[in-house]
Length: 95
Image (cartoon, rainbow, N blue to C red; front, side, top):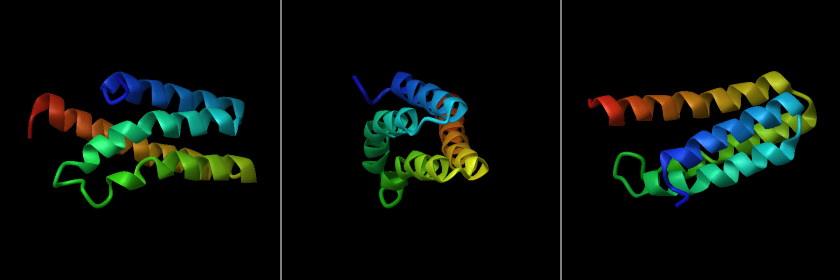
């Protein structure tokens, strides 16, 4: 139930809400929503060693928001968005 693309999209929505409101709790919720998807990716050979790092990107964004470095928080989330968008393109349109 929590490993599909719908939770990834919900995670992104939570992250953007947290960034716009500058509230770390929303971004942490986004990290928790993204975690099962990252674990699922970690079971594939290609992403075995670094898929567990993906939920740490919203955590890094949370720390940056708490420290007041909002641009760095957006960079953390941009890396997560870009990776997920690339993965979606590969899955949906083939290699």
